[in-house]
Image 1 (tube, rainbow, N blue to C red):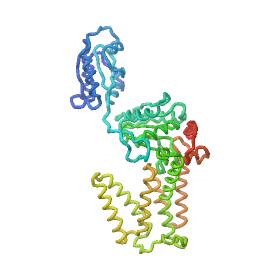
Image 2: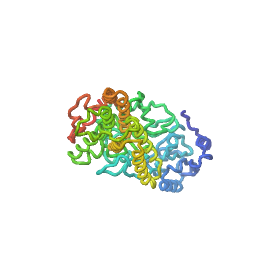
Image 3: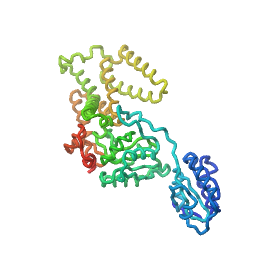
Image 4: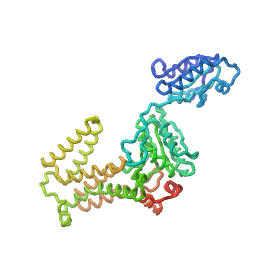
Length: 477
């Protein structure tokens, strides 16, 4: 609702005081002053302004000498405002949107427009290395909850005039800042325009869950497929590399991570450590992560199948058989442990830091030793589930880890009920989930395997050098 501003200064001040409920909101501050012989009213939110700059601006206002009445707003601004980041608002709606985002606004007697003076500063924590996306070598900085700081961290790494950071406001009530970041000339224009249109036409009251709320608005398809559509990272270096490769990055205010899209399963499995080491070591780390995730998916169902068909176990592997009495069926043991591990994860999130280490030790000793000695679980099954739990932390993407967990549980259930055909069926369903999945751009989730692209495939698994034009743009086409 766009409302034209009143020309009567006192009426305008009264109208703004009512709209902003300045008497009820203790953080909404206004100050009536005189600048160069003109009455003026300054509105700002106390927690969003740089107090040092605020003090300098007010001190300058009080020192301004009376000005001519015939000066235009632009001429008056040049004489009376020392700060450079200035905007002019012609209606109440635009002014309130900027004011509530932290920009101080100035009403001046004799002028219809309102002046926005941008010296806001958002509360944020110190830049530090992300807890999840740690590296053995490389940068130790990470995103914070302020989108302006996050954009600066990317701009620090890409000093190019072709870097674009488009700002959008999403949410009727929240008006959350959403930044669309890309490299002009490298991004796929059709996909970029598609994402722009989706963001512009989002109809939602608030992005209450930040990026997850935005992701559900961008992707309207079925969420039954657990494999992730987006890649998330809290690392500015990984984000800058994705931008340079032709990807689109979306950052949401109040969220310390960036969304990278489009993202195939090979993109999601990549990590910064793969590129901070020499080519041979980086290639080894990629293969190790791929193999460990494959084992985390297949180890439990394969072991269950061999328990059901012991005659298939080679003599050299006879030691893997369960020799103790099985009080619970192996399938039930596996499923109970799958849920128990998630229960321990949730409990650890709510455990105070000072108690997390001793409680985790106690839980490991008590649950591990007592459950085996009491007969609830067999030692072999506990061993394999311990490996799977650790293997899930070999890659940083939570969504991919849980997707593999759901597929593993599906394979366990089908194998336990239908035997070898259930095992084959569970594997086939998993392969179909991956093969039939698509990225947000509508392309194959298995690119560059399907469709086949030799150069891109080598780049995913080996540290080979590719031109920037071939790294990301083929994927978006």
